[in-house]
Amino acid sequence: MYSYQSGIGMKDQEGIIAVKLARRGVDAETRDLDIDTFDVPDSFRQKSGAFVTLKTFPGEELRGCIGYPEPNFPMAEAILRAAQGACHDPRFPILRAEELDDVVVEVSVLTPPEELKIEPRKDMPGNIVIGRDGLIVERGLNRGLLLPQVPIEWKWDANTFLEQACIKAGLTQDMWLDQLTKILVFHAEVFHEESPYGQILRSRTQ
Image 1 (cartoon, rainbow, N blue to C red):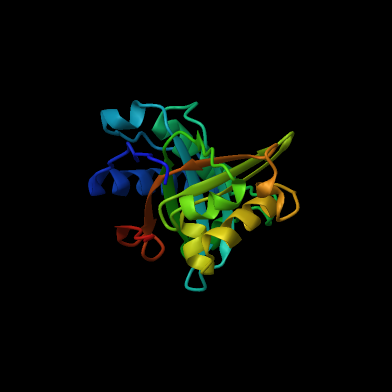
Image 2 (image 1 turned 60 degrees about the vertical axis):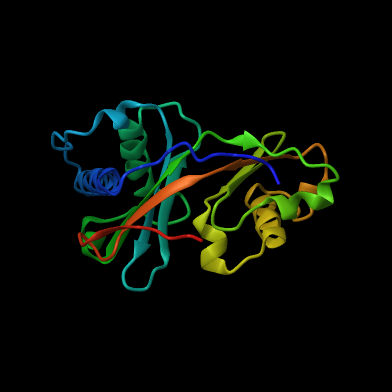
């Protein structure tokens, strides 16, 4: 098994702030408004990857998911950028203001991706922990990312998780076995609204 520490350690209150920040970003984007001033802790000024996921309520169908896996922006900026982007996920129609009461917001704050080097490649699934690890598959210009909570929601095992990450990257499902395909892992702290504008909880993925 590889050794990889989360390194985030977000407090519940920080997670609550993260989701509230994302919600403000979503609301402002759909209503074409400026975002109100929002004070954040110093930890939000540190660079971090972040994703914002929108789901319908109560159906829990995906409505948008956009993010930044690399720590290129301060956390607060990454969350706001992801929130605005999730409203324009190209897989779905642009989010409308009248939908705001029918969607819940989820924020994932990511550790920097780290390449998973396992030989032989067939042993790769045994080194992936469902619920802890997110996956990035890269090969040439192809790249696909799946957050740690995705295999939990779909009840995938590690092998299926790798296959689906390959498919997300536009590759055949067995390309994770090829040495020219790069597999990266990351961890995430995940917080979500229990209902639209409702209580904010830490997501339990394991």
